[in-house]
Length: 411
Image (tube, rainbow, N blue to C red; front, side):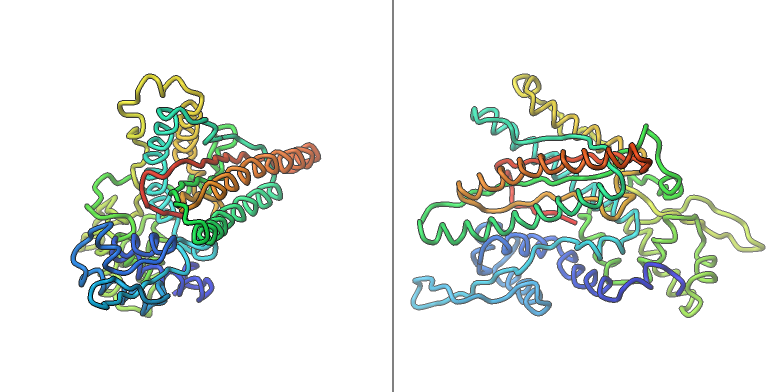
């Protein structure tokens, strides 16, 4: 099959299949995200998050252990007649690594980013409100636009990636300190974002070519559950990759890209993509005595204003809220212009970690250091731009607030 998505490295496709195990059921995603922060038994998880009976949750734990998403870390005495429960931990959080992210078709990246943006804006608003109403300092969010060249972009993204990984290292250190001191951990939400804004308001030619059709009729499923069947199936991914770039019929795709498969197999995949709202019919044509449907990939309608509903006046008048509105407006602009997910090396992570007071201060300090580093990167890039390098604009947003929930999402 002559599709770029399938000819990429096998390891990336295997990672996507592995991730599909977690994405297939929402509760598995929650289990892995939560157990990356702390050890829990199935009964611990059921008691805190519900999600069904202990036996049903235990079955999900067993599947995740089988596929190496969880590992057993030891017994937990319950004090109930000598009964012992097993504690589990997740070695890593459920997110896309850089290589597997690059394999995703454009419209899947858009859908995943939309989910992160929605969760980020809703929870960031709650964190900001709590900080303001509690009278805490509100230097929790920054949003700047940097003028960079290609080299500057690469260096800045590496810096964002590195700081994202540091957050989880700080969490591990905090757990050690708490075990010794007996103090409590607090959940902290950390935003790292670096994406391309349109230069002078113009999308690139590639962005214009990658123009999925907006689809507001989305099944009542989470984006993870909608993505899972595709991540485990290279043919569906290949179809969607093509439909992002061109409108095509089932017969046309079969003839050009999947001649070794039966037409029935291809037709089945198109049907599933339509059912899951990843593809839609944009035209019906008459070819001889046959009506053919022409399909195109879809993109989510993400430009809503949910985070701004019923905002108290005391919050609207603060500097941090103005920064929050600026961040959201720049996201909207980039999505509308097609530049937000055009690059596969953009960075957008919303991470929930458990830290002590020292860990909190370390993460905030790392963000301040990162802001200074980014200014130095921009200064060097501007010199190269003056010498003839092509400019581009990166929007960078950083935040650290008290976490309203336990959701963890990251590409």
